[in-house]
Image (cartoon, rainbow, N blue to C red; front, side, top):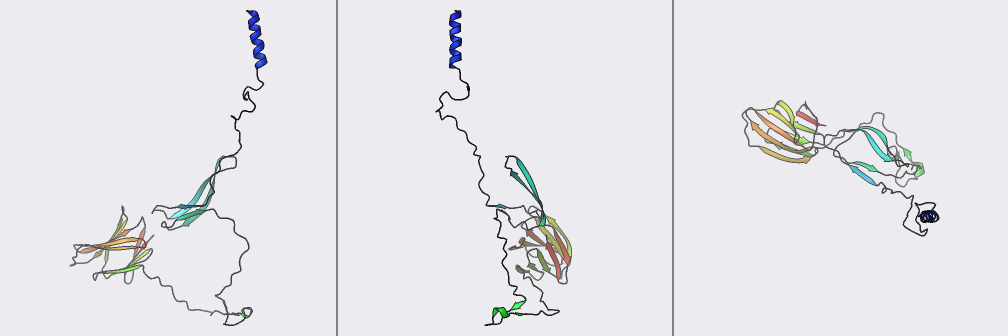
Length: 238
């Protein structure tokens, strides 16, 4: 029995491998080693949309993967206002050529027809030039009976009326500005005007005892101011 046990021990020593974790066949292809890591696709363009209550961007936080695989962050201060209707674009842009193209300032240089460009005459501006004020045309204008006239702009509504404003307030879901105007002896059926210009979707007029009401339906959440003007009232939407 002792001879048999000694023989088995000797056989195990002769058949043992120096590294048992390697395959017995050195030509085996079962083990695959690589140092290639998965790389995300190149950044092209990302479009970000904001809800209607957004007015300013304070800062942007980017979470990025470092070369060692760890997740880090970079904070970029913005502190700028924007229109929530607009789309915020994140785009990978190749560094532009630093060589700037010289731009001719046509506001101070004039060239007569058939004149040598090298003999350009520099126009002298007047000491006190008269500049006509820029007038912004309304996006839409409409009249309701002989009571009010509405001029719709991007962020403003001019209401031309001789009637006194009693009150103004807001309601949400959806967002609306309600303005009541004092008027006695006026009765009419509810009237709705489709606008879809600027921030205004529609305006609805309703008749009540002693006053009539204008309900301005907006396309999102806004603050507003109402001030009296020479022709009526001006509503600023912000």
